[in-house]
Length: 302
Ligand code: PEP
Ligand code: MN
Image (cartoon, rainbow, N blue to C red):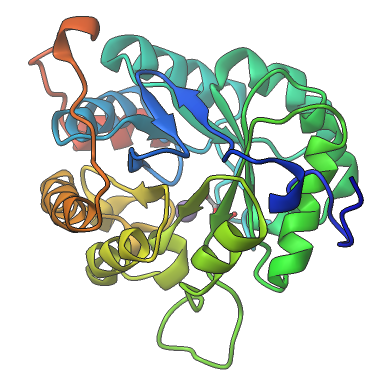
């Protein structure tokens, strides 16, 4: 079949049915609205475990956390690296939630794949073609974030770079683009959701945390994203956003995350989707012991 577009494999014409991706006990790309949540960056064992327990309790299906961080300033905290991956593994084992984490370099795709259930291509790397090719060879689902300066077509072509290597488990993520507006960190392009759904057969995730940069806009933008057809959301959550090492102003507290999930559920049901409840019978019991975030921070800073 001839697909007359600069991208081929992601194109709607290339596949009759939508791509669906199994993530733990939920399926992305069907009726389920999948909620991915966790801190911007893995800071410490206590912070990660407390967040994992909290977001699972409130209905998250996938745990996020950055171990290799693409920071705008070279002097900002760059992430815990492999130690962060080990902490994500522990949080996954305790919570039963699959994990998504960013991979920044082709040379670390093997290492990150040992720990991650989903490989995240960060917005800054949307057009890093060697990296896209490398994750295309990995046996893991890949989430391709839209570059802040990328058109929808460039973003879809990035997905095709991954798919051209044989990896068909690809999802797109809208996370805001650069515009003249300065009130928000980026401009969340909600129209990109139905456009991407129309042009491709891939699941579309929306990240209102990076899209707005403001915690109090996250719930409304999650609801709008689901109303517009998003298959999932990616939300930054921190036990104490005021002291987060990265992206505190856009991070929800665990309590606010619970309110956000309730709001997403209302909209999902209104548009004929569902936010599945995880079956506790298939998950590890939640450890009631909750370590203090202060202890967590002192561990990192020590
Ligand atoms: C992130 O999700 O951790 C992140 C750095 O986001 P983005 O690549 O969209 O800036
Ligand atoms: Mn972040």
